[in-house]
View 1: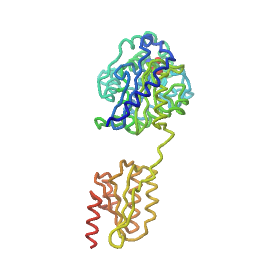
View 2 (view 1 turned 45 degrees about the vertical axis):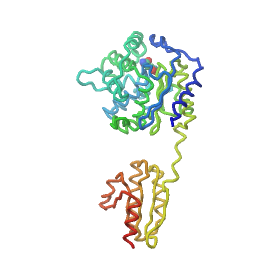
View 3 (view 1 turned 120 degrees about the vertical axis):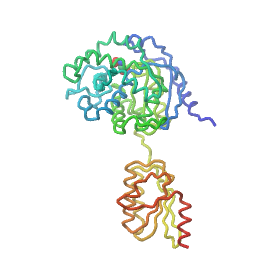
View 4 (view 1 turned 180 degrees about the vertical axis):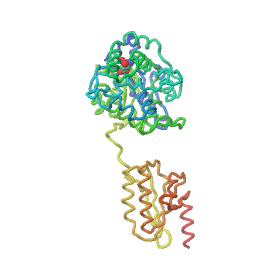
Length: 427
Ligand code: GLU
């Protein structure tokens, strides 16, 4: 069987192909030379599978989609508090290149130019490597290949960068920038000129979707708290002054760029990227938005739709053994707060006696930290009530449970073997 996903993406591409509206960004002269017909779409699952269609090998400049990655880099290097001292997290409701500051004297957020120029200035320089080169290396690591700068787009933007320079001088005047604003704006513009394809973007995005871990190498590249901060700001501020519209219609944390790219990241699920150079009045890709809207609708990706919690954390519960003295719970699915709460309520029904409780975790696909803590608390209380607890956890995901509150929990590999052993023991 061939998975239908590429066919579906192809279908979305075809549906949006006919729309010729919008205009090419021309305030960066080189961007006005882009082929307006280019169209590409890609998707990466959290476990690193990439699907892509259309002009998926065509490179274009990352532009403002570099902003969340620069933000991630400085958060990772300096910590959230230090970065917050310089850049806020409030949506601005203004155009991306507005020459303005928040009332508290900081740029309102890192997704508009004033905030992005500021985050660029925070990159710690070492070994005489330029800030833009540090970012190129970082983004290359996320993309899993060596990315390059587009020199002609860079030079073209530098020649007409009056507005970004004004922002730089404003930031220097109020002390948000602490060094030469011309150097910082140059570095920022170079960062925007990094070339990517939609495939690169979804791979970079999947590290964010996957809580900071590169699924293909298994390497942790960003802390979970950094990823949460970046995605939150993408959600509220990523789509320029159309952020509210985007939140209600698409509902996926995203960032767009004036070369026509849009990257969306749905935590724990997918990253998607679209490319089509013609832009709407907010500076977002017209066909890119259309494709993202369709994907969100068709695949139920809107963040606010939430995933109904599995009502089936307990796949089965039965009593067995002599005098039905063994109470067996087979669990399945994801163990997060909601499921753990449900489970604790079920455990509450266990009569207070000396019976043995067996809990089989083999089919639990993911245990969240809070799920683990709540589960162990429940186990502890069952022991307090006088029960013996036996866990089937072949992958040892509750490893430290053995010494939880100094109690030795017995962990087994296989439910059938354990039952065999227990029943044999009773007979
Ligand atoms: N380099 C562009 C600028 O700073 C990026 C803008 C964008 O993609 O929104 O004006």
